[in-house]
Image 1 (tube, rainbow, N blue to C red):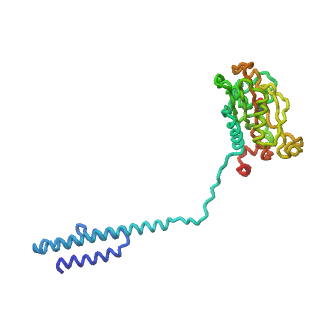
Image 2 (cartoon, protein in one colour):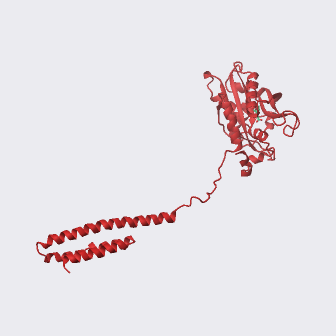
Image 3 (cartoon, rainbow, N blue to C red):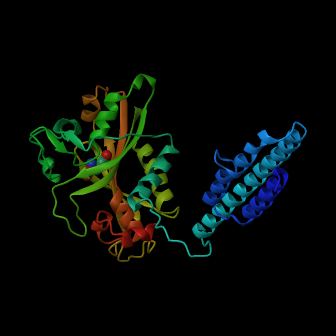
Length: 345
Ligand code: DAH
């Protein structure tokens, strides 16, 4: 065989080998065997030195054409193999989108949080600010500033968790009255706030008592605030929460930090006043304590009680939620049992 025939023969074999290659390793081997230092084409081309001047460019051109053709077919094959590898991978890793998904349990806001947010919304709409207080409070704010000096008998109304003689877990959100009055700049106008939060009492937990529960304190202080403002405000809020047909009943009561003090009942939203188990057959449900801010409380915050007056009220969040949703055990709020909590999603 002359050189030309050898190249042609090599070309035929190589191109047919190339056709049957199915993996990258064999493909690369083929290139080494062909074009490498000891490759077949290289060997053949070593014979070029024996050619005549006329033959050499002809054979050279032939060899180059073959090398180019091989290069192009090599790249095409390489791409084809890569595609096949990729397709196989996609095939084996493919997802069956028709399989049923894993159900993810969705959390929801706690019923107490929902109740709190609903009440906040009502007061925000009336221009109140919402303030946050301290659950660890001082005797000073929790009692003294609420007109309950050290020897005051009404301190017994609230069994207290003391941390030290002067530091305690707040027994009510009322200390926020004094704290917000202290912080408020009355030269810029009156004060309207609610303070929601957790409170603590030394109590044995049962269906209606908990050593930890939630209140929402309300306070409005300005010039010329009267009992009529208190009545109008609470009437509006309670109707928004329990229905427009509700009526309020005001009973005189006693709290050390208000004078006069009232307890407010709402006409039963279940039986409409006829008498049922929710209202204990009285037609009325006790819903909150309130009153006109005691002059002492105003004076202790540096306000002149002959110029400023105010009203305050305290709501129990659990009580409101229990009444509205017919919950009869307060412990349900704290036990984290999803079967209880899910009912209020
Ligand atoms: N602090 C009272 C309690 O925990 C509730 C209360 C009653 C708050 C009357 C008030 C109020 O602001 O005016 O029992």
